[in-house]
Image (cartoon, rainbow, N blue to C red):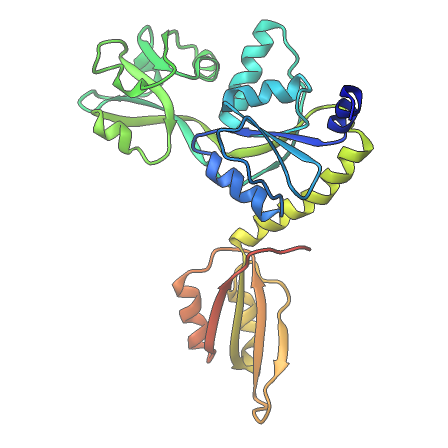
Length: 306
């Protein structure tokens, strides 16, 4: 095959950028696998090819993903909203293109960008930081919030270990991503203000795709939605009194119309099968039992296609 043939073949393959290593990596790879995209190359391979679909996976730093999409190097990207927003503002300052399409939130990678201060310090709100030094990896997001509130500050830009800045005398406070808060506590800091909430999103270039690529995208998008819907959904089975059906429908959260199956030899009871799209609590199951339901079984759903 000639070089021009290889180039044409590459133009027909859907190219997706994902984080090579970090907090989104495992969930992203599980999501792609759940959609039936089979990739065998190790993570240290920058470019991986799906075995069963015309899809290429580009493994890069998370802060490179928005630019790769906006510069039309890749067709899709999976990235945290925090990185996406920060990159947009940075590229606007540099005069670079920022157009993209957000296809869907992905329901993982939830975190918050928060201000934290030394534990012993009093806190009266963001104005307390007027004129002070704040260490952060997200200067544009922080600057936008502080500008909206008329607060001037001195940014200290760090690319890692932001939480050590106050102890090292580099800053009076920090603004960093927080998931559990354990790292803050271990460094003598406490979270005092959330300025941005984030999760992973699927984004796409702002151009029409080649028909061959669009065909692949049209195939995997319903699968993506099905995998995401299945994560929160449960399949519930039980035997219940027929007269309790209206109450059962009301207390099962996010339930579709249930399937009702006659029980042989017991006309007063039926088997109920239903999909619930919301989180189930023990209290819900106990309420079902109080209505006379028995043999209540809650089963996770691996895949779901509407």
